[in-house]
Length: 388
Image 1 (cartoon, rainbow, N blue to C red):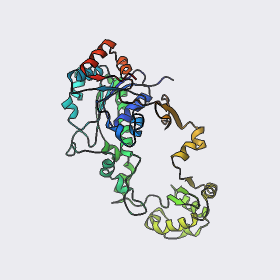
Image 2 (cartoon, one colour):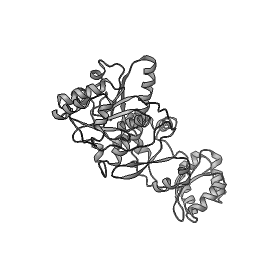
Image 3 (cartoon, rainbow, N blue to C red):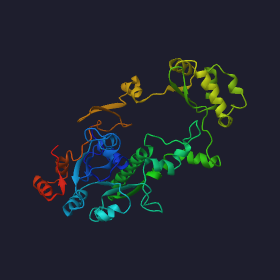
Image 4 (cartoon, one colour):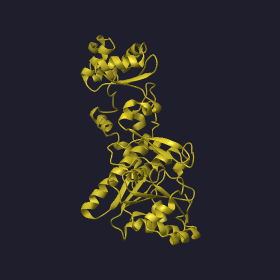
């Protein structure tokens, strides 16, 4: 396959998940990505359980890259970063505002003689504004942008979402912004600077909810009750609806047609106002039959529904396997690892992520650094080559 970003060079000085995952997508679309790590390593390697040199964060954020250990506090290490950036198409960093300037790897410095460079800075709150220096993480971004407040459970308590949505959204928006900048460069010949924040990514991710907040003059009401998960006799099932007539179908499937004409439940608005009573009626009914029974009944009535899958269920699902929705790659020290395929295709298959420093020599060679130059850099302490 002719990968769309084949031939592009990327220097990834970012850490964690958000910005590195954008660089991993560039690699999956064909770019040559060199991941720069300090001697202490990317802090993402220490999130959760680390096995064979990678955590789940560093594994998924760095697939398809090569890692190079660089001491950027040394003159030789800093000079190497400048050299690599000088032939790169894209440069990424995710330090707090001001750190790149102090290190001498900021956009103004690196683009001075290289106006074609596309440079992405990803931070918690962005490079400007009163909160620019605040520390931020996925959880903080969820809280700041209203995401946790909107995720109130049936217990009435706002809940943090555990799938790292701010980091994932930040990485996807970063990849999108870089892709747009690349297209602009084909027209103008110029690169440019991209200032992207986790908090803004988390806010844009919820655009429909902000519009809803305005339209409904305050805190959004329940969106499409009685959508949600219900406990059947042997597990959980999810039902949902997007049109008024869908509620009548749900009532027919439950053999409770009287609910459709009950004034408490005869519109999205009234169902939202009386959601507790409605949900209890439906929950009591669903509890009496198995998941498979309800899937058949709801399916026959045209109700959108699904078993509440866990990750093992999804990986084993016949539709997932038939459509190639999951890929497997061999990760050294871990064996076969599953990874959901990137939607839309045009990528190379998922591939292994480097341990710290793995592939450093090959990465430097791809950027035109000779073996003798590498030896001098090793001797000076500017870089560490692991030999793997």
